[in-house]
Length: 145
Image (cartoon, rainbow, N blue to C red; front, side):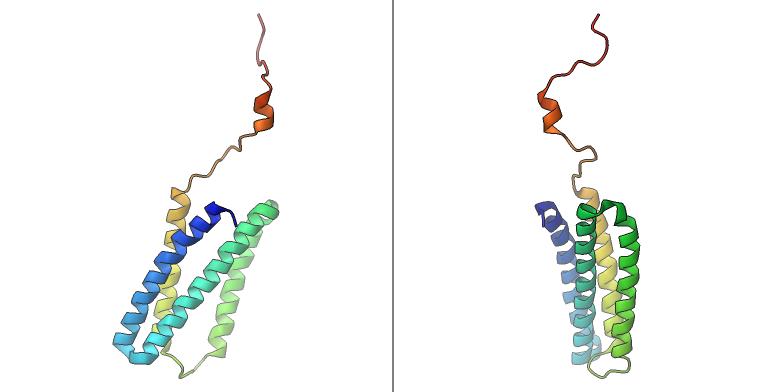
């Protein structure tokens, strides 16, 4: 992974993890141990889904740029389906508090998206790629008179 990609990942994962820690503390204070576990599961799930999604999109942009937009749409649908499968598997569970899980998952996802948007706006991305081979030869453009 190039350093710019790692930097963007850090600028999104660190704030999300910090919010996850706060959500665990709030979940523990409000709903006890099961609330803390639910908040932790929600935050970890959001970081995993969003992190894997970011990695897949960066890989697609580098290897198959013509499929970038379609892959983005497919990725978001796949993330929602995986979340639906996770919710179906743990429906009615007593392992963790479902409200703390849902709150943590939503807040962590929103923070991830906001941090990712901020990191993208702050990154310096060339919109024109400099080509050193063409710049070595001096070429005249225009009339010679």
